[in-house]
Image (cartoon, rainbow, N blue to C red; front, side, top):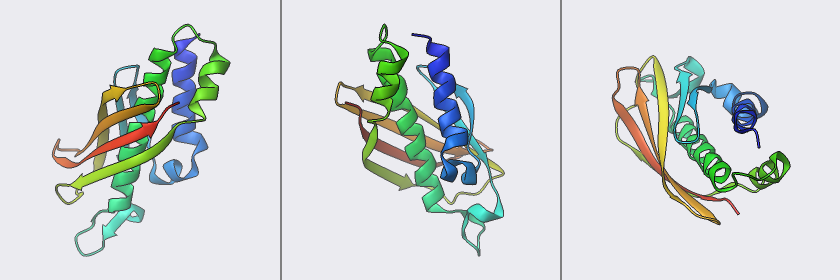
Length: 151
């Protein structure tokens, strides 16, 4: 199974094939089996509070959810090492968010934002992921925990 081909597919799906991700402007800064970094620029279309000019909470939760989902995918890749490309991509199609909790810690102010995450549990049926969103100054804006069906 060509790992790099699967990672490229995951990046293409995230950046180019999901219209809402494109609307937000998500770009993958780093992607391997252990780490992910998603970046997006602040734009007027992403404002939630027009008085403050801060990021909309729905954008925050979306980016954290995408981050968690991608880490669930890489967890499947690790568990299915040795499987065919087709077997793994078939399993990718079954991934879905079961639960997402977001804690909004500070107003989403910044020039750009970076989402990262780490896997808390990668089981055969369920993955649990912890995500963070920082602004361009490294200030923690929000954290999330997501549960994802993976099998």
